[in-house]
Amino acid sequence: MNRIELIRALPKAELHVHIEGTFEPELMFAIAQRNQIEIPYKSVEELKQAYNFHNLQSFLDIYYAGANVLVHEQDFYDLAWAYFEKCAEDKVVHTEIFFDPQTHTDRGIAFETVFNGLKRACTDAQVKLGISAELIMCFLRHLSEEAAFETLAQALPFKDQIIAVGLDSSELGHPPAKFERVFAKAREEGFLVVAHAGEEGPAEYVWEALDLLKVNRVDHGVRSEEDPKLLERLIAEKMPLTVCPLSNLKLCVVDDMAEHNIQRLLQQGVHVTVNSDDPSYFGGYMNDNFIAIAESLDLSNAELKKLAKNSFEASFITDVEKQKWMQQIDALA
Image 1 (cartoon, rainbow, N blue to C red):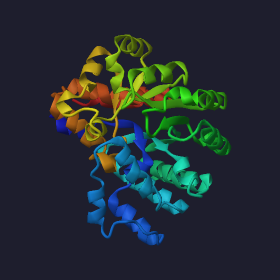
Image 2 (image 1 turned 30 degrees about the vertical axis):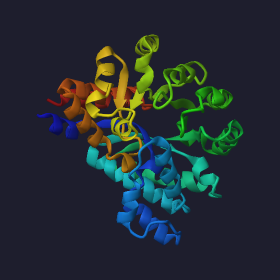
Image 3 (image 1 turned 120 degrees about the vertical axis):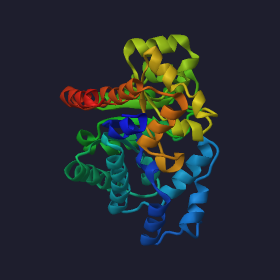
């Protein structure tokens, strides 16, 4: 089969997606009207125009503004369910979803309102679509260590249903070291840990994520290439990087997809995976990201299959489940 057919046929795991970043303009507008919340856009088209931004901060500004319309448990369910329908279209059979409780609790929305809506959608995705899903609670790094500790405390009653904690939002000026004690406490409570590092921040942030936060995965990590010793370590430890190509292009981490380093990293033996990050804002879901790099970098079918395998190997599913999906990938011509 050709590359596009293979991409559509490949089972995939998505390990780097922010549920608030899957908020399509049509759904945002509908929920805003349902909840009688005013947003500064008169139509879906006007809202779509606002999705044109040029850097991480301008993206985050509209990202947080959009989140304001999410108030009730059903809103969070609807948000997640719309994403699961996209997963079904793209043959994403397992996903580990980031959510940002502080974006909502700081607005007076109860932690359990957010969690219960998302969790109910995860349960229905398994039953109705055959998609397995886990939730990863992220701390907003532009907020304080104290605020992160408060959020961790709110999560503890649900810790058996939250597989990991993560670290996201504005990277520059907020190094992983800022949250070393929070992550130590999270690990003590039994959470797996991941963190955004080496997207807009330097390779040094990846070192901190590894040494101070003791992460199980690095989210983004594309700037690791700037430090040969760091690359050696990532390869030796088989440390996954959850790379988001279209996001990198939209936020000018790369100026042209043909310049993206995911293929170079893959060929060197770095455990890279493909993900969509904030797909409603960055121009595409999982298959869109695969197609973009396949065409711009002239990826072989073998490289595409390796990327799909990497996604399962880097996931938090059982070894038995991993083996099942590996066999399905191998069976594809």
